Image 1 (tube, rainbow, N blue to C red):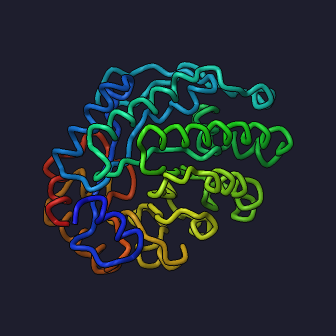
Image 2 (cartoon, rainbow, N blue to C red):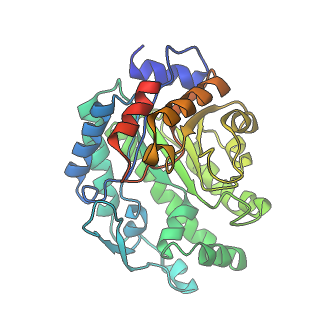
Image 3 (cartoon, one colour):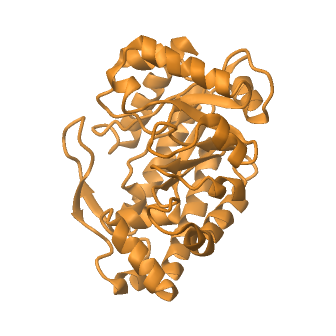
Length: 326
């Protein structure tokens, strides 16, 4: 099997020669340049022999498109530094519009460079934040403000979220046209009763997620839902038409791979390795043990990966150990 065949079989729940494997993490110094980000992404994919590449754009790029401002920290271990949030009052939601399209254009250009360099046998998927995750960055990552505004003034905030959704739909389409095999749709910490009651998420936010998922272009065959954080609401995965679900089984109160797959309706699952523990601190035996446990718990329908983005301080030997163990 080549990498694409391996991924396609895993998504279908068919027999594979081994689980497809991939990992991703921010490269803070390179992520401000499409060319440099593409180059480091391709180099890592080839170094570790990843079967799939989850593209890792600058996390702030979506909020930058709507007027948020950040600057590089200038250090490989430190992310963008906030200069000014786009939303500081309720009125800002009403005025929200795209003012910096280049922030997203750069990511489309970069993923196109990666896809062309790696070819169609190594699928590359574009990261797309859900509207509420974008909103969190718009408010300077003040999750409480976003949730408070949404619940107290949905007539003001939801129209802004709908405008964000339309931009994300266009970004997804352009990314697939550039060569992406699909999207990695990330809901960062909000699909959890820790952020808001489950019924509130389903009432206010799930319809937007469903709208975006429903209009992904036909060429997007490798689409992943990522539920980030702890105590995730797996019922969201059951309600969205993504064939693969990603989450960290090592975060507090999260389900195991087998349990999560059952709750999500039998979809393929992505994850199994602790991104902030085993992959950072090792040892290689611990990583191999987690790989074996993942393979044993989900014999079919597994895409082996970290539960989330690996920290930039991760050791190369530990990523290689994950690949070798697979």
